[in-house]
Amino acid sequence: MANLSPVLIEWGIAARAIPCQQESGDLHLVRSGQDEALVAVADGLGHGAAAANAAAAAMRTLEMCDGESPIVMIQRCHETLRSTRGVVMSMAWFQGKDDTMTWLGVGNVEGFLLHRDARGMSANEALLLRGGVIGGCLPRLSASVVQVGYGDVLILATDGIRPEFADNVNLEDSPQQIANRILFQYGRDTDDALVLVVRYLHGKGSATARQIRG
Image (cartoon, one colour):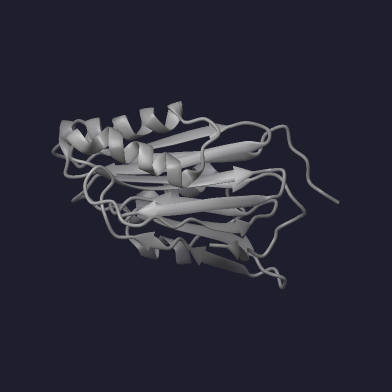
């Protein structure tokens, strides 16, 4: 029997700027409704105001996109950011009508989808990242679609977070608890850092993630 919720996702965010800067170049976007949700994390190149301005421009562009595919959204960001330092970014688009998540990434914002397998053990799938810079050298884009189930957890993290965090996540914790713990335990003091944690609240139980198109 399907799990039905008035919202499609719940989420938590933890972030901090590099100690020598007042502004962080790592920003996020969450836009969620009953049937669809868009989440993204952008890392402006470098540090300080110029990096923050580039990341903010990317988030504003995504806010204005309506009904477009994730690939088109990235292309629109690329055109907007040509006069900036540029960003690296990963994003995911959840669709409740068929319990799928479309995700893609340009650069080094890590993405992991964590779930319970058929034996109840935690398992994860990593986002395939394409090298390049949005606003600079944009690679040929490729998005993957995976099935998601109730309770599956998506984590997007900038390179201010050490990537080994994915092996030590308690899926019973709330998204905010997970985000706080990852930043505290795996955040680097030498870079801006941001981690976004999203839990899917629709679908038939905790599904094993399976690529269905890419």
